[in-house]
Structure formats: C-alpha cells, structure tokens
Image 1 (tube, rainbow, N blue to C red):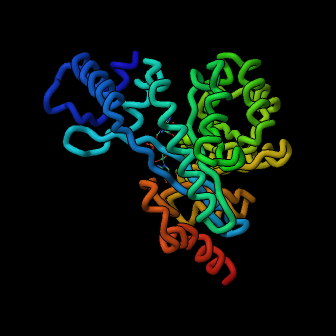
Image 2 (tube, rainbow, N blue to C red):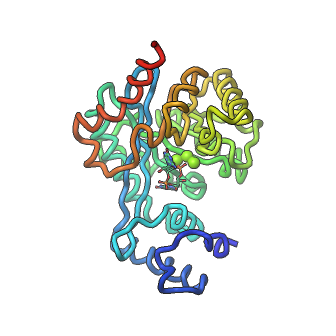
Length: 292
Ligand code: C2E
Ligand code: MG
Ligand code: MG
Ligand code: MG
C-alpha cells in the first residue's frame, strides 16, 4: 500500500519518526495545516519549441516547504492530496494562481505562451469542473487558449466515456489538453485514438538514456510517428543534455521540457527578459553546432 510505498524515499520527518505510520499521519496533519494556512506555492517550468526558437508553455508545478523551509518532494505529498480528496480544497487557489500567471506570462513571453496545469481524475470527473474553470478564467482575464490541462493515462481507464466527453467540452471552449507521462501508465491505443488532445508528453523514462538506448530510440521514434498521424504534438519530458535534444530534433520532436533549458522556479523568476532569453539559448547553440 501507499504507506509502505513511501518508505524508501527521503523524508523530512525521518529524524523524528522512525515509525512509518506516524510519519504518514504527521504528513497528513502537516498537509491539513498547510491547506488552512494556504502555504502551497506554484512554480513554473518552461517548455520550448525548437521549430521556432520560442517558449511555448510553462508547466505549473506545486511546491510545499517543510518546517525547516526545505521543499518536500511532490512525489510524496501529491499522491496524498489526491487520495484524500484534499486536492479539491486546493483547486480554487491552484487554478486561480495558474490562470493569473498565464494572463501575465502570455503577454510577456515573445510570441505568447500558455500555462499547463496538472489535473487529477477526481477534478476532471467532478460535475462542476468546467464551470469553475470558466469562472476563474473570467476573474483573472485569462483567455481559454492560455491554459492547458495535463491529465495522465490512468484517468482514462476509470471512466473513458466520461473523460472523453469532458475533454471534448474543454476543447470546444478553447482549453488545450495534454496526455502526461505517456508510456508509463496503463496506455491503451484504443483510447489514444479517440482522445481529443493536442499534446502528448513522453515520459522522462524514455528520454533519459537517449541517444544510447536502442529500445528507447525505437519507442520515441514510433510515438513521434504515431502523433504525426494522429495530429498530436509530442513534448519530450526531462531533456537534460544537448545530445538528447539533438537526437530528438533529428527525429522531428521539437517540444522540450527539462533542466537543459530551465528548472521549475517561482513566477517572479520569469518576469525578466533576460531570464526568458536564457531559456531558449540552448536551442540556438544546438543549431549552431549542428550546422558545422
Ligand atoms: P509531471 O506532471 O510529469 O511533471 C514533470 C516533473 O518532471 C516535475 O517534477 C519536474 O520538476 C520534473 N522535471 C522536469 N524536467 C526535468 C529534468 O530535466 N530532469 C528531471 N530529473 N526532472 C525533470 P515535480 O515538480 O517533482 O512533480 C512531480 C509530479 O507531481 C508531476 O509530474 C505531477 O504528476 C505532480 N504534480 C506537480 N504539481 C501538481 C499539481 O499542481 N497538481 C497535481 N495533480 N499534480 C501535480
Ligand atoms: Mg505534468
Ligand atoms: Mg509529465
Ligand atoms: Mg513525468
């Protein structure tokens, strides 16, 4: 179960609690207080487009600090928020923060951009979801086209008909949808062919060993071809090296997110022209070396 599953990970509470159950209880208590005190932060990581040299998107990633001020890994606290349903309590703040950021960034980033928000199944399948989003977009002067929603494959399995219906409705409103962590869930090509989504994000797992792993190369190549045929665009997650970028570029994958370009950072970090220019620099350097 989840409690045992979290054991191996580095924990901020470890020095105080040897007992995993107590540690878990403690994290729950900590999250409850963090929700009441509105202490979550939303950070942003750019996604770049090598075809035009621009920032295309920012993914909004939730952050929470422990008592000492260090960041707690989202891999630890997000599953708890989702399983407890508390994610619903954070949603209004999360969507409002992301939409305000999108409203700001889309005007500052040369050529415009959008902000991608991670959404879990409970949110997507909740009856009031679309209305809540629309209200927040209005309140924050955010165009629907400036927001993208990232959903994982797992959610399609639970209630595919309803998910497809909701995604279709979102798309008609002009809100984009991306399949997140593609290839790691319980993928079914039967669903992929029916999904009204614009973007497919290949999980970092398949990018990590490029260009040295033959199986990964074969997988990324065929996902790319599949997306071409389906009219979807591929985003490569976790691009960390120039070699990876070059290989992806040569295989017609042009959208990248990863430490090679930038790590997630608070909104304030993205408000200067210099910071935005730094992000796309590896794209130009990549092009320069490939033309030699
Ligand atoms: P994700 O949606 O797949 O987000 C991408 C993760 O990859 C982020 O981890 C990001 O920091 C990390 N990453 C990006 N580029 C690189 C790279 O080059 N190298 C490496 N090693 N990592 C890279 P993060 O921020 O720790 O988030 C983990 C997961 O937590 C996310 O995975 C997402 O599933 C979930 N999450 C984060 N924020 C939210 C949120 O607001 N709502 C929900 N429901 N889930 C969230
Ligand atoms: Mg994501
Ligand atoms: Mg992802
Ligand atoms: Mg991932």
